Each structure stands twice: as C-alpha cells, then as structure tokens.
Image (tube, rainbow, N blue to C red; front, side, top):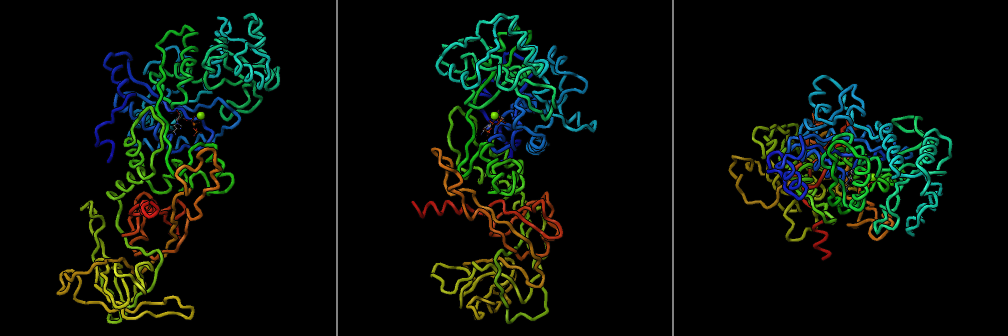
Length: 592
Ligand code: ATP
Ligand code: MG
C-alpha cells in the first residue's frame, strides 16, 4: 500500500526521464511543483506533487516548490502559507530530501548564471540547520524576467501594443496583425520602460511577442508577455507596475531554476510551442528545460477548480477551505486521511495522457486500506439506546479484554469496563424485524462483542412511543472460555457501559454532492449539493477514547474510521474519515 514498499510506478513521463538519465543528458533531474497562490491546494495538486517529487525521489533529483505568483490580483500570503503547510505534510518524511531550497544569499541572477545543483540544498540539510522552509517565488525573478523582455525587444521579437485588452483578444481570434506591430526596437524599449515606470494606466498598453498572427495555434498569435497592473503584490509589494504573463514567466522561471523536466497538465500542451519559442528566442547559454503534459485528475462527487472551491467557502456552503468535505489537501488531512494514503492513491491512479473521471471509490479504497492497518480499535455508539441486563448485578463491573489492532499484534489489548447498563446502537435493534435481521430483536439473541450473548425480553417505551430501554438477560456462561461460549449466534454488536461512557461530538461526513459530475455540462454545481453531507451526533464512547491523540487514527468497531478534529479539547470531537464499507455502492446496486 505504501509507495515506499511498492515498486516505483512506471508511466510515459518516467520512461522519458529514465531515457534522459540513461543518456546522461543532465547532471541531475530537476522538477518543480508550481502552484499559483490563489487558493488552497486540492487533490489534483496532490497528484502533481506526488509525480514531481516522486520522480525526483526515484531518480535522485530535486524538486522545487515554486509559487507561480505573477498575478497580483488574486494571490495572497494566506494561500502561500497553506501551500507550504500542505506540501510539507504530503511529502514530509517521504521526499523531504528532494525538496529544493535556494541557498541564502544567492540571488536569482547568480542562480541563473549557473543553475547547478550547488545552489540548491535539499530540505533536510537546511532543516538540520534549523531554518524554516522557504519556497521559490516566480516573483523573485521579476528583475531577471524584465531583462529578458528587453532582450526580446532588442531582438525584434516583442513589441509594445496599444490595443485595449478586448481588441487584442479580438484581433488574435481573427488572426489580424496589431497596427503597432512594426514599431522600432527603440520606440518599443522606450515605451516598455515607461510602462515599467508606471506612466500608463492599467490596460493602456501591453508587451506582446512577435511570432505569427496567422498561426493555427492561437497561443502563437503574438501573445501577451506583460500587462500593466497598478496593484500591490503579496511578495513584491508596490515595486512593480507591470506583471509578466504565465507563459512568459513560467518557461523562464524553469530555466532560471535549472529545471530539466517541466511537467504540467494537458491543457498546456498547446502552449508548448510558445514555451519553446520564448526560450529559443533568447540565446540562453544553458540547456533548456522541456515541458511534458499529463492528464489532470478529476474525482467523482466533487468539484476541483479553485474558483469553484472558493465559491463554496465564500458562500458558506462549507465551513472553510479545510472543511473535511472539501477535496482540498487541508480538508482531506483534517478529515483524518494519512499522507501515506493520499500518496498511495496518487500512485495507484497512474499517469496518462487521457483525461477521465476517477471514481472517488478509488480514493476511499486507498484510505480504508491504510486505516485498516494503522487504526486503533475502539467501541463507541453513535445513536445510543439503553440496554439493561436484568440478571447482571447492579454495581458490579467486569473488565473484558479487547484487541487494539488485529492487523498489528504489537498494538496489544486493553480492558473495557462492562456493567449492568449498556448502550447499543439504535440501528442494532429492530422491533418488527424481518427474518434476515440477525442483530437484537424481541425474543432474539445477539452477541455483545468481547462479552456475553444476550436475549431481549422486553421493550420499555416512553409516553411518546419511543424506546426508553431494552430489558435483556445475559447468558453468563457465554464469555470466552465459558460453557456456552461457542453457541452459534449470527449477530455480534458493539456496546459501551453506560456508567463508564464518555460523550464525544462526532461529525459524520458524507459526499458533498449527490451527482458524480456536479458541474457536468455547465450545471450549477450548487444545485446538486448533498443535504446530508454533515450530521453531528453525540456519541457514547468507551473510556479509553479520553486519551485519543490527534496524530492517531481510530476505528470505531463496525462503524468506520475516525480522527480527532483539530477543535477537539476538553470536549472530544471526532471526524468520521470514512465508513467501513461503501454505502453508496449499495445505493447504486439498488438503483441499477
Ligand atoms: P485549478 O484549475 O484547480 O484552479 P490550477 O491549474 O490553476 O488549478 P495551479 O496552482 O496553477 O492550479 O496548479 C499547480 C500545478 O498543479 C500545475 O502544474 C497544474 O498543472 C497542477 N494541477 C492543477 N490541477 C490539477 C489536477 N486536477 N490534476 C493534476 N494536476 C493538477
Ligand atoms: Mg493555474
């Protein structure tokens, strides 16, 4: 299950890298993960992180975490911080040694002049010196990028265009040349410097590449390289009045950092000629990075784009970016999914060139498989109903021995108190039970896990008709080793001793949407929200859960996997990470 123990995956990108390694094409393999800090990372980003850091790990290379922060409007330090935390969580202890860090005191310029491995310290070395992890920022290269832009102008490969933004788009759509295309290099340089100096308002002018307006590839039709934005930037403050476009900044940032394999999602395939064109137009001395594309991850029953996730947050549909129902890395983490499970998922789905929808059941499978191995078993009752054992002495307490984790003998056993009054799950009792109902019913037997076989004699109801308690007798010889311990009983149910139970708030999460593709064909994804995606109950828990530790995972026997929430304190709070089995699969079978 754990990627470490599994053979490294093989796919077309790894094949390319392996070929380059065999040919000794590069001194070392250098990848990067370049999020734009305009939202929290989601599970799609996790796929990209595991691919880029995974390759660095498998081929003894380095992977940089780079903030692709060229658009001041939507970016924010809150997002930068969350990205650092999420990446750390996902790769920490796994590919930490691959995380590239710039050496203190080395500027982007000195890095650009060399780009050798010497300028990058693997994160662990840096950590050993007690330094905080500093990611790379594309905005640290703004000076360098500006110089490259001037070089393009001098080479007659870029021009300042006076068309307003909408007209620029329209001209490009119609494959029409800008009337400003043939300005002299001197005039272009002068205007570009004045753009930089802040002389013109937003949208007044732009810098465009001079490529081919008739190109069948619209990205090659004299695309924008710089635009004017009088905006404060989260990292560079008010230094800049012009900001580079993604296509210009990205390939050059890759070059500056000495990236060898620039791996991105398929929609950038059509940008690749531009990526190469910019690099090749500059007579750069070092080996150029190459771009490779793979299919983005889409998972059923959720939406993935940061824009849509932001909408869910802003409109209060969820409690925040790290709401455990969100497909964000922080939400998945808060829900209780271990980083290993997320990495196993990323490895299981593989890397291809075909976009498709990944069934969320694939993720759930990886989570269950992981948690089954690590979770401590505990007894808890989510929707309690009281059981009184009429033949068990009041005030007597027995202790039963319960296994902490059958998957891991080293986890040992614990003692669970047992007494005359217990709670069982309301669902485990049925008054008018069908013949195939093998749990507790009037006149029927059921085994209490780790304890006695009981029979229900009487149902006591309140004035409103609701069940107040179930009066039962225990077969006092039926505990392990007892004379009737081997009686054949079909149903085993869990329980907690009423006098010893502790209360916990339990948040039961389910899928956020009722449709596999919430935003299919432009449908308003908020019209298919699952109204039951969160239910909160007060559970009765065995006393051992009082010591629940945030880093540990628990299986509430028969119910699912649960993790202490970050809000848990005096008052215990658990999030349901996942149920034991896939309830939706049954729904589907019913429907089908
Ligand atoms: P979104 O479209 O969800 O807003 P984005 O592509 O704008 O995401 P970026 O911050 O630009 O987000 O992405 C950083 C990196 O993660 C890019 O290399 C991008 O290709 C990759 N990435 C983004 N979404 C996915 C996904 N769903 N599957 C795989 N990789 C992804
Ligand atoms: Mg993006």
